Length: 268
Image 1: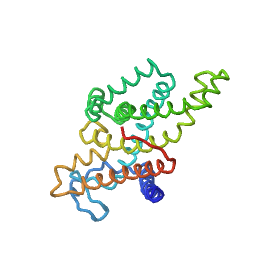
Image 2 (image 1 turned 90 degrees about the vertical axis):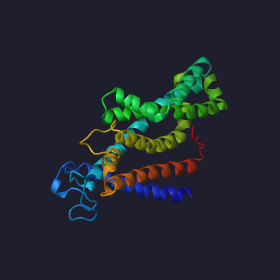
Image 3 (image 1 turned 180 degrees about the vertical axis):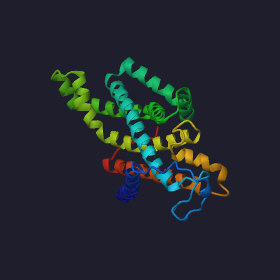
Image 4 (image 1 turned 30 degrees about the vertical axis):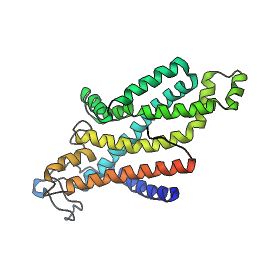
C-alpha cells in the first residue's frame, strides 16, 4: 500500500513540478479582456475558461502553483527548523529547560491555528513573505513535541552514555549523535508539513490576508469565483482541485515514507 501511495504521489508531484517550471515563463496571467469575460471551459485559446475580468484561468492556475509550492516548502522549513531546534534542546537538557519549552509549546498549541494566522497576518503587511513566516511560526509546536519524544528515547541508549564518558561536549553530542538519528522522522514531518502549509496559505489568501492581488493564488482565485458559482463555477473549481491534488500528493508521499521508515508520527 505504501509503494502504491508513493507511486501516485510521485506522479502528482511530477505534474505539480511541471506547473511550477512553466509558471516561471507565464507572463499573461493578469491580462484583462472584458470582451472575453466568463468564457466557458474549452473555449478557443482558453482551455479552462476565463474569469470575470477575462483573465485566463489556466495561466493563473499555473502561476498560483509556483506560489503555493514555494510558500508550502519554505513555511514547512521554518516550522521544521524551529520545532527541531526546540525539541532537541528540550529533550536533551530536560529539567527546567524542558518544562519552560514544553509549557510554551502548550500555550501556542492552545490557540486556534487559523485565528493565530489571521492575527499575525493582519498585524503585519499581508504578502507572500508574511504568509510564509506566519505559517512557519504557527506550525512548529507539534514538531517540537515529536522530536523531543525521539530525543528522550535516543538519550537513554548506551551509545549516548559512551560519548558522555568520552568527554564529548553537549553541542557535539546533539549535533553529531542525536540529530542524525532523528533524520527519518524529520523527513516525514517536513513532507507532511508542506501539505498543511499549502492549505494554510490558501485559507489566508481566501480571506485576503495572504498573497495580494493581482498576484494569483489558489485561495484568492476561489474567493474571486465564489460570487460566480452559478454562472461560472470553473473560476473556483479548478483552483480547488489544484489544492486537493497538491495536498493529496504530499500527504501520500509522507504516509508512504512513514511506512517505509517505520515511524510512528503522532497527529498532535
